[in-house]
Image (cartoon, rainbow, N blue to C red; front, side, top):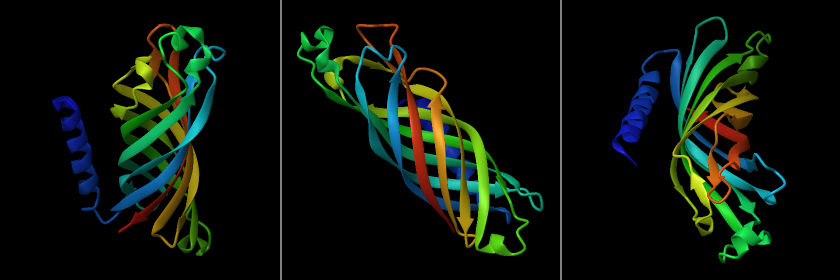
Amino acid sequence: MNKSKLTILAAVAAGAVAFNVHADSRLGVTVGGNYNEVHFKQTDIIKLDKQLGVTAGVTGEYMIPGIGFGVDASLLYTMRGSKLYLGEKKIWSSQGIGNENCTLHYIDVPLNLKFKYRNLNGIENTIMPIVFAGPTFSFLAGHSKCGDALDYKTVSVGLHAGLGCELLNKVQVNASYNFSIGRSLRTKLLDENDAKNRTWTVTATYFF
């Protein structure tokens, strides 16, 4: 990982810690899973299966007092992937490339604008609805070789939106959909066949 990436990640981590200084901010631990598709532009060329992945890291939250709006930022390790049936096409099978698990390891930095519905006559102290949306900045930390058939983009950007709930003012359970707005990878022998990650994610965050 180059120096510029380390600088960005250090800044995000420092910002997450700073969240916990203010009375309306807090820091938590996030874990979850995802269901990902490496979606190719030319969908009829490569058959694929979606795969399950994992995510884990830290989340900082700041809520504006009294109105229910706030922001959060996370620093997460995320594993995404799909199984690609490259061996079914002669262009790859002739090179000894078979059906490959395309596994992508990312450091994700999702940023959210969020809204918590608090006006529930006290019920919000038990369960509180949440909606959120924002960008995700993904830094590729590693990947499977896939027979050296693919070219990977080091930094990609996605957009996500989701909903969830907060339980007992401590635990947030969220579900979201994320889609890349630029390519995540492409095939080396078919330069125009770009692919983007499309990911469903479920997470739980425990706030201290």
